[in-house]
Length: 138
Image (cartoon, rainbow, N blue to C red; front, side, top):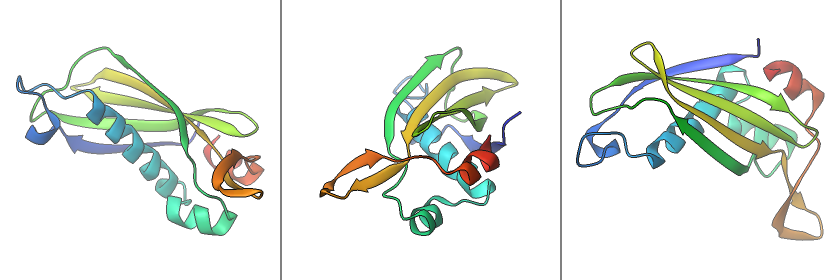
């Protein structure tokens, strides 16, 4: 089983549509928070990872969600995050939003190990993911 982190949050009024249901873009915000909290829990906080590895960041190149249930205003939920796949230069973070013991939403983010392009520092390119990072989260 890969290294996994969970955090709890609540569907607040500002997160919801007029019917009190979670507005779907906010799940992607929860996924991003989940990735940051996963890195922190693994001892690799995002900001320190950027400095220590001299990378531009871990840019998102794809994101998806499958809606199995719903979350409504005042629901207390738990977001479970883990890296489910490593490629040479990219990795997939899987997120499960648990609501009342059931998975309400399944999501994935594909991120790259982002490096500045040495020929044009306004562009990014994918770099090889270090083995130490893979060992921590794999």
